[in-house]
Amino acid sequence: MAAASQETAERERFAFGDNWRRFLSVLDENRIQTGERSLCKMLQVSDLNQKTFLDIGCGSGLFSLAARRLGARVHSFDYDPQSVACAQELRRRYFPEDPDWRIEEGSVLDAGYLGALGCFDIVYSWGVLHHTGAMWRAFENAARLVAPHGKLFIAIYNDQGKISERWRAIKHTYNRLPAALRFVVTVPVAIHLFWRPVLKDLFRLDPLASLRKVRQERGMSAWTDLIDWVGGYPFEVAKPETVIDFYLRQGFRLTRLTTCGGSLGCNEYVFMR
Image (cartoon, rainbow, N blue to C red):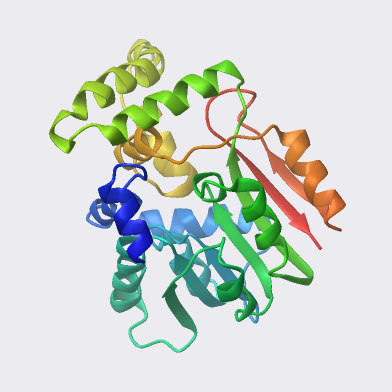
C-alpha cells in the first residue's frame, strides 16, 4: 500500500517487510515444522483440514504456510507490501498457483476491505495488532472476522507501565535515525536483552541455548526478532486482563492463555466465539 511505504519513508513506521525478507534466507524445513507445531499447540488441534484461516498481518508468511500445510484454506494479508511479497515468495516455493492460498495487500483498520472478506474458522494475528497505531479498533475489527464457534489467536505486547513507555521512545528513535546510524540503538538493546541469558548459558557450557530457544518455540530467528523488537513502531501494549475483558464483552470465551510472566514480550490468547 502506498500509505505504508510513505509512512516508512517518513520514518514513522518500521519496515517490517524488509526485515522479513531477510528472514526468508534462513527459513528451512525445521523452522516450518516448528511453526506448524506451535500453531497446533495453541489451537489445540492436530491439523487444520477443512478449516478457513485468516492471517492478519502475515509478515514473512511462515504461519500462513504452516496453516496451509496443515490443511487449511488460507487468506493472508498485510499492510506492508514487502511483507505481502514475502508471503507470495513462500507460496511460489511451496504451493505454486495454489487456489486455496490467497495473498493480498490490506489493512485491519480498513472496514471496507474487511467487509468483503467474510468470516473464518481461525483468525490469526501474532504480534501485529499492536503495530497498527489503533490497537483497540484493530481488536474490534479482527473479532468481526471470526465465524460462529471459530477461534481468534492473537499475541499482544505486555503492558509494563513506565518500562513500556521507555521502549516506545527507543523504537521511535530507531525509526527516526538514518539506516546507517541505527546500530547505535540496536547494539545497546542487544546487550541489554541478551547479556544475562548468554552469561547463564556460558556457565551451563551451552552458549547458544537462548538463541536456540527462539527457534524452538515458533521457528523464528533471534536476529530477526531482535530487529523487529527494536524497530517495531507504532507500538502499543495491553495487560492480559484488559484484552480478556474486551473480548468477553464481544461474546468470546478464553480457551488458552500463555503469558510472558509480566516481563518483556507478547502474551498469547486464543478466544472462541
